[in-house]
Image (cartoon, rainbow, N blue to C red; front, side):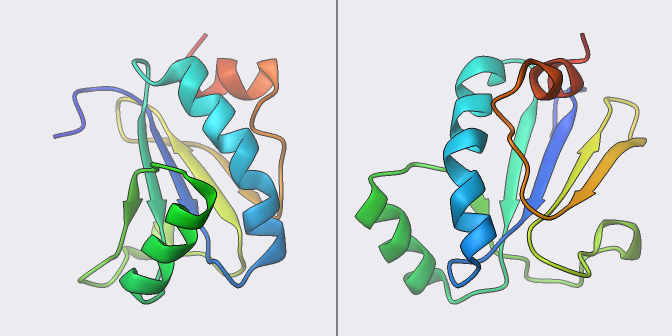
Length: 113
């Protein structure tokens, strides 16, 4: 269950330079808002490759590997793509491409403030 909190859904891959470049700002956002939101970092890559990448960076991130098709409204046409979904299930933000998720604007978006 997602506990009636906003959801930060990020599509990424280890082979995607902009994805890797934005991960430190996502980590910063998680540290600032971890009790305010649920984080789902989704990749279609081989789990062992992803785990090795995360281990090499010493990152413990909420990475998920879909086992069924992703619903159309949450599919990514390009990487990275990020959705923020409010506690009622409405998409309140979608961005394609790298973004600075450590900003105060991003903190407000995810925490609902």
